[in-house]
Length: 307
Image (cartoon, rainbow, N blue to C red; front, side):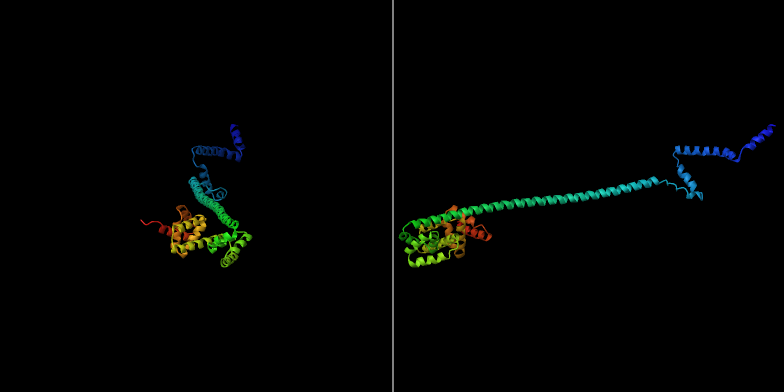
Protein backbone atom coordinates (compact mmCIF):
# COMPACT_ATOMS: atom_id res chain seq x y z
CA UNK A 1 0.00 0.00 0.00
CA UNK A 2 2.88 2.34 0.86
CA UNK A 3 4.59 1.48 -2.36
CA UNK A 4 1.48 2.49 -4.25
CA UNK A 5 1.39 5.90 -2.48
CA UNK A 6 4.98 6.66 -3.44
CA UNK A 7 4.34 5.80 -7.00
CA UNK A 8 1.27 8.04 -7.00
CA UNK A 9 3.31 10.93 -5.52
CA UNK A 10 6.08 10.51 -8.07
CA UNK A 11 3.58 10.40 -10.85
CA UNK A 12 1.99 13.68 -9.61
CA UNK A 13 5.21 15.85 -10.46
CA UNK A 14 4.93 17.48 -13.87
CA UNK A 15 7.81 17.90 -16.29
CA UNK A 16 8.18 21.66 -15.56
CA UNK A 17 8.40 21.01 -11.86
CA UNK A 18 11.10 18.51 -12.43
CA UNK A 19 12.95 21.10 -14.63
CA UNK A 20 12.73 23.72 -11.92
CA UNK A 21 13.91 21.18 -9.37
CA UNK A 22 17.12 20.71 -11.26
CA UNK A 23 17.56 24.26 -12.70
CA UNK A 24 16.96 26.24 -9.48
CA UNK A 25 20.17 25.11 -7.75
CA UNK A 26 22.14 25.77 -10.93
CA UNK A 27 20.76 29.31 -11.30
CA UNK A 28 21.43 30.02 -7.65
CA UNK A 29 24.98 28.81 -8.02
CA UNK A 30 25.58 30.92 -11.16
CA UNK A 31 24.16 34.03 -9.52
CA UNK A 32 26.27 33.46 -6.46
CA UNK A 33 29.39 33.08 -8.58
CA UNK A 34 28.64 36.28 -10.48
CA UNK A 35 28.19 38.19 -7.21
CA UNK A 36 31.39 36.78 -5.78
CA UNK A 37 33.36 37.55 -8.97
CA UNK A 38 31.97 41.11 -9.05
CA UNK A 39 33.04 41.60 -5.44
CA UNK A 40 36.58 40.50 -6.29
CA UNK A 41 36.65 42.93 -9.33
CA UNK A 42 36.69 40.22 -11.92
CA UNK A 43 35.52 41.30 -15.37
CA UNK A 44 32.33 39.33 -15.30
CA UNK A 45 30.51 41.39 -17.90
CA UNK A 46 33.25 41.00 -20.45
CA UNK A 47 33.42 37.25 -19.81
CA UNK A 48 29.69 36.88 -20.30
CA UNK A 49 29.75 39.01 -23.42
CA UNK A 50 32.64 37.00 -24.81
CA UNK A 51 30.74 33.82 -24.09
CA UNK A 52 27.64 35.26 -25.77
CA UNK A 53 29.71 36.29 -28.78
CA UNK A 54 30.67 32.65 -29.27
CA UNK A 55 26.99 31.68 -29.79
CA UNK A 56 26.06 32.04 -33.49
CA UNK A 57 22.67 33.76 -33.17
CA UNK A 58 23.02 35.38 -29.77
CA UNK A 59 26.17 37.29 -30.79
CA UNK A 60 23.99 39.52 -33.00
CA UNK A 61 21.92 40.61 -29.99
CA UNK A 62 24.70 41.51 -27.53
CA UNK A 63 27.33 44.28 -27.74
CA UNK A 64 30.98 43.58 -28.09
CA UNK A 65 32.96 43.30 -24.88
CA UNK A 66 35.02 46.28 -23.74
CA UNK A 67 38.73 45.76 -24.26
CA UNK A 68 41.01 45.76 -21.30
CA UNK A 69 42.89 48.81 -22.53
CA UNK A 70 39.72 50.91 -22.84
CA UNK A 71 40.74 53.01 -19.93
CA UNK A 72 44.11 53.56 -21.55
CA UNK A 73 42.44 54.70 -24.74
CA UNK A 74 40.25 57.02 -22.68
CA UNK A 75 43.32 58.40 -21.01
CA UNK A 76 45.02 58.83 -24.39
CA UNK A 77 41.96 60.66 -25.72
CA UNK A 78 41.88 62.91 -22.68
CA UNK A 79 45.60 63.63 -23.01
CA UNK A 80 45.16 64.47 -26.70
CA UNK A 81 42.27 66.76 -25.86
CA UNK A 82 44.33 68.49 -23.19
CA UNK A 83 47.18 68.90 -25.65
CA UNK A 84 44.84 70.53 -28.19
CA UNK A 85 43.45 72.84 -25.54
CA UNK A 86 46.95 73.78 -24.42
CA UNK A 87 47.92 74.47 -28.03
CA UNK A 88 44.90 76.75 -28.46
CA UNK A 89 45.76 78.53 -25.22
CA UNK A 90 49.31 79.12 -26.46
CA UNK A 91 48.00 80.44 -29.76
CA UNK A 92 45.64 82.81 -27.93
CA UNK A 93 48.49 83.99 -25.70
CA UNK A 94 50.66 84.66 -28.76
CA UNK A 95 47.80 86.57 -30.40
CA UNK A 96 47.26 88.57 -27.21
CA UNK A 97 50.97 89.41 -27.00
CA UNK A 98 50.95 90.52 -30.65
CA UNK A 99 47.92 92.78 -30.11
CA UNK A 100 49.50 94.18 -26.95
CA UNK A 101 52.69 95.03 -28.90
CA UNK A 102 50.61 96.73 -31.61
CA UNK A 103 48.75 98.70 -28.95
CA UNK A 104 52.00 99.86 -27.36
CA UNK A 105 53.34 100.86 -30.79
CA UNK A 106 50.17 102.80 -31.56
CA UNK A 107 50.35 104.49 -28.15
CA UNK A 108 53.97 105.50 -28.78
CA UNK A 109 53.02 106.94 -32.18
CA UNK A 110 50.18 108.91 -30.61
CA UNK A 111 52.54 110.31 -27.98
CA UNK A 112 55.03 111.25 -30.71
CA UNK A 113 52.29 113.00 -32.70
CA UNK A 114 51.17 114.85 -29.56
CA UNK A 115 54.76 116.01 -28.99
CA UNK A 116 55.01 117.19 -32.61
CA UNK A 117 51.69 119.03 -32.29
CA UNK A 118 52.89 120.69 -29.09
CA UNK A 119 56.13 121.76 -30.81
CA UNK A 120 54.21 123.15 -33.78
CA UNK A 121 51.92 125.09 -31.44
CA UNK A 122 54.96 126.61 -29.72
CA UNK A 123 56.46 127.54 -33.10
CA UNK A 124 53.19 129.16 -34.15
CA UNK A 125 53.06 131.14 -30.91
CA UNK A 126 56.66 132.26 -31.37
CA UNK A 127 55.97 133.26 -34.98
CA UNK A 128 52.91 135.22 -33.92
CA UNK A 129 54.94 136.97 -31.23
CA UNK A 130 57.65 137.82 -33.76
CA UNK A 131 55.03 139.27 -36.09
CA UNK A 132 53.66 141.36 -33.25
CA UNK A 133 57.16 142.58 -32.32
CA UNK A 134 57.96 143.30 -35.96
CA UNK A 135 54.75 145.25 -36.34
CA UNK A 136 55.57 147.31 -33.28
CA UNK A 137 59.15 147.94 -34.48
CA UNK A 138 58.02 148.97 -37.96
CA UNK A 139 55.40 151.25 -36.46
CA UNK A 140 58.03 152.87 -34.25
CA UNK A 141 60.33 153.47 -37.23
CA UNK A 142 57.49 154.87 -39.30
CA UNK A 143 56.57 157.12 -36.40
CA UNK A 144 60.11 158.49 -36.37
CA UNK A 145 59.96 159.23 -40.10
CA UNK A 146 56.56 160.91 -39.68
CA UNK A 147 57.89 162.99 -36.80
CA UNK A 148 60.86 164.06 -38.91
CA UNK A 149 58.58 165.00 -41.81
CA UNK A 150 56.33 167.02 -39.50
CA UNK A 151 59.39 168.84 -38.18
CA UNK A 152 60.37 169.90 -41.73
CA UNK A 153 56.76 170.86 -42.49
CA UNK A 154 56.62 173.15 -39.44
CA UNK A 155 59.71 174.97 -40.62
CA UNK A 156 59.54 177.70 -43.21
CA UNK A 157 59.64 176.13 -46.70
CA UNK A 158 62.54 178.36 -47.65
CA UNK A 159 64.54 176.94 -44.73
CA UNK A 160 63.49 173.29 -44.92
CA UNK A 161 63.83 172.96 -48.74
CA UNK A 162 67.67 173.44 -48.80
CA UNK A 163 68.05 170.96 -45.94
CA UNK A 164 66.02 168.34 -47.76
CA UNK A 165 68.00 168.94 -50.94
CA UNK A 166 71.17 167.92 -49.11
CA UNK A 167 69.62 164.50 -48.47
CA UNK A 168 69.96 161.70 -50.97
CA UNK A 169 67.18 161.34 -53.52
CA UNK A 170 65.80 158.26 -51.77
CA UNK A 171 65.82 160.06 -48.41
CA UNK A 172 64.03 163.02 -49.96
CA UNK A 173 61.31 160.73 -51.28
CA UNK A 174 61.01 159.03 -47.88
CA UNK A 175 60.53 162.33 -46.03
CA UNK A 176 58.28 163.96 -48.63
CA UNK A 177 56.07 160.87 -48.80
CA UNK A 178 55.45 161.11 -45.05
CA UNK A 179 54.22 164.73 -45.36
CA UNK A 180 50.77 166.02 -46.04
CA UNK A 181 50.24 167.01 -49.71
CA UNK A 182 49.85 170.69 -48.81
CA UNK A 183 53.14 170.76 -46.88
CA UNK A 184 54.88 168.79 -49.64
CA UNK A 185 53.82 171.35 -52.28
CA UNK A 186 55.20 174.25 -50.27
CA UNK A 187 58.60 172.61 -49.89
CA UNK A 188 58.80 171.49 -53.53
CA UNK A 189 58.14 175.07 -54.58
CA UNK A 190 61.27 176.21 -52.74
CA UNK A 191 63.50 173.41 -54.03
CA UNK A 192 65.58 173.68 -57.20
CA UNK A 193 63.62 172.53 -60.25
CA UNK A 194 65.85 169.56 -61.10
CA UNK A 195 65.87 168.18 -57.55
CA UNK A 196 62.11 168.74 -57.21
CA UNK A 197 61.50 167.01 -60.55
CA UNK A 198 63.59 163.96 -59.61
CA UNK A 199 61.84 163.68 -56.24
CA UNK A 200 58.42 164.07 -57.86
CA UNK A 201 59.12 161.27 -60.34
CA UNK A 202 60.22 158.99 -57.53
CA UNK A 203 57.13 159.89 -55.50
CA UNK A 204 54.99 158.73 -58.41
CA UNK A 205 56.44 155.22 -58.20
CA UNK A 206 56.27 154.85 -54.42
CA UNK A 207 55.30 151.29 -53.34
CA UNK A 208 55.61 150.89 -49.57
CA UNK A 209 57.17 152.77 -46.69
CA UNK A 210 59.40 149.80 -45.85
CA UNK A 211 60.91 149.74 -49.34
CA UNK A 212 61.39 153.49 -49.18
CA UNK A 213 63.24 153.20 -45.89
CA UNK A 214 65.54 150.52 -47.23
CA UNK A 215 66.26 152.49 -50.40
CA UNK A 216 66.97 155.63 -48.38
CA UNK A 217 69.40 153.85 -46.12
CA UNK A 218 71.19 152.21 -49.04
CA UNK A 219 71.59 155.56 -50.71
CA UNK A 220 72.97 157.04 -47.49
CA UNK A 221 75.51 154.23 -47.29
CA UNK A 222 76.56 154.82 -50.88
CA UNK A 223 76.97 158.53 -50.24
CA UNK A 224 78.91 157.99 -47.04
CA UNK A 225 81.16 155.50 -48.81
CA UNK A 226 81.77 157.96 -51.65
CA UNK A 227 82.65 160.72 -49.19
CA UNK A 228 84.89 158.33 -47.31
CA UNK A 229 87.01 157.80 -50.42
CA UNK A 230 87.58 161.54 -50.66
CA UNK A 231 88.03 162.39 -47.02
CA UNK A 232 87.43 159.70 -44.45
CA UNK A 233 86.75 161.24 -41.03
CA UNK A 234 85.46 159.96 -37.70
CA UNK A 235 82.36 162.11 -38.17
CA UNK A 236 81.29 160.06 -41.23
CA UNK A 237 81.64 156.84 -39.28
CA UNK A 238 79.65 158.33 -36.46
CA UNK A 239 76.86 159.33 -38.82
CA UNK A 240 76.83 155.86 -40.33
CA UNK A 241 76.69 154.31 -36.88
CA UNK A 242 73.83 156.57 -35.82
CA UNK A 243 71.95 155.74 -39.02
CA UNK A 244 72.04 152.01 -38.40
CA UNK A 245 71.39 152.33 -34.68
CA UNK A 246 68.05 154.03 -35.42
CA UNK A 247 67.03 151.28 -37.85
CA UNK A 248 65.25 148.05 -37.05
CA UNK A 249 67.60 145.02 -36.98
CA UNK A 250 65.69 143.38 -39.84
CA UNK A 251 66.02 146.38 -42.15
CA UNK A 252 69.66 146.85 -41.22
CA UNK A 253 70.36 143.16 -41.88
CA UNK A 254 68.71 143.38 -45.30
CA UNK A 255 70.83 146.42 -46.21
CA UNK A 256 74.02 144.68 -45.10
CA UNK A 257 73.14 141.61 -47.17
CA UNK A 258 72.36 143.68 -50.24
CA UNK A 259 75.56 145.69 -49.72
CA UNK A 260 77.59 142.47 -49.45
CA UNK A 261 76.45 141.50 -52.96
CA UNK A 262 77.87 144.82 -54.26
CA UNK A 263 80.93 145.19 -52.05
CA UNK A 264 81.94 143.04 -49.12
CA UNK A 265 84.25 145.77 -47.83
CA UNK A 266 81.34 148.18 -47.55
CA UNK A 267 79.34 145.65 -45.56
CA UNK A 268 82.29 145.13 -43.22
CA UNK A 269 82.62 148.89 -42.79
CA UNK A 270 78.98 149.09 -41.77
CA UNK A 271 79.37 146.36 -39.16
CA UNK A 272 82.56 147.94 -37.81
CA UNK A 273 80.95 151.37 -37.50
CA UNK A 274 78.16 150.28 -35.12
CA UNK A 275 78.49 149.31 -31.46
CA UNK A 276 78.54 145.72 -30.22
CA UNK A 277 74.85 145.58 -29.27
CA UNK A 278 73.66 146.88 -32.64
CA UNK A 279 76.07 144.59 -34.49
CA UNK A 280 74.81 141.53 -32.59
CA UNK A 281 71.19 142.43 -33.40
CA UNK A 282 71.99 142.86 -37.10
CA UNK A 283 73.88 139.55 -37.27
CA UNK A 284 71.04 137.80 -35.42
CA UNK A 285 68.52 139.16 -37.91
CA UNK A 286 70.65 137.73 -40.74
CA UNK A 287 70.01 134.16 -39.51
CA UNK A 288 66.57 133.84 -41.15
CA UNK A 289 67.89 131.54 -43.90
CA UNK A 290 70.89 129.23 -44.23
CA UNK A 291 72.36 131.28 -47.06
CA UNK A 292 72.13 134.54 -45.06
CA UNK A 293 73.55 132.77 -42.00
CA UNK A 294 76.62 131.74 -44.03
CA UNK A 295 77.10 135.34 -45.18
CA UNK A 296 76.81 136.55 -41.58
CA UNK A 297 79.36 133.99 -40.42
CA UNK A 298 81.75 135.02 -43.20
CA UNK A 299 81.47 138.71 -42.31
CA UNK A 300 81.90 137.99 -38.61
CA UNK A 301 85.03 135.96 -39.24
CA UNK A 302 86.57 138.92 -41.08
CA UNK A 303 85.57 141.38 -38.36
CA UNK A 304 87.14 139.30 -35.60
CA UNK A 305 90.81 140.08 -35.01
CA UNK A 306 93.28 137.41 -36.14
CA UNK A 307 95.04 135.50 -33.36
